[in-house]
Length: 204
Image 1: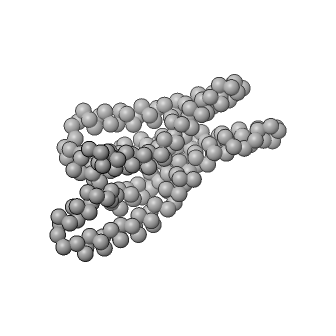
Image 2: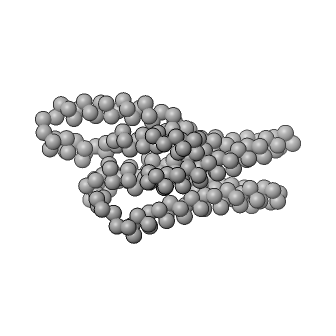
């Protein structure tokens, strides 16, 4: 639900919020007051919130794939599979999930290719905490981490599909949970990382 809401509701909501923020900042007398306001409240710029919406290829791969995947995986875990018809439906939804995985992988590769990596968001939002000139080694490490997670996401999907074809139901279920966990954290990170950053700013 969160992932679908994020994709569907963030564009209009972020524009409204940013408009309100711009109004508050316009009423402030000095740039120091603006800086203080931004340091106390995590203000995520509209350019960060809507960065993917300028790239249709990202929308039709990563975003469309994400909606397909989260819906399909939710159905796979919750719909019954007792009758022949229900098992046939399970297999059909599984194919949709695998197609979604392919779209997500293509989308992430496109995101990396056009440098829309999440690290840039934190450079734009928390400039005081992130070096302006990120070392090449750190950039490479950041992309390597993303690719490693992406590879596990794809491999776990392939393993889930392979075990289903072999009718190894017990291991299929185990790998389906592993695959789901490897993907759902991406939605949760949008909540966990800002909260963690805010908590650290209060403690340090």
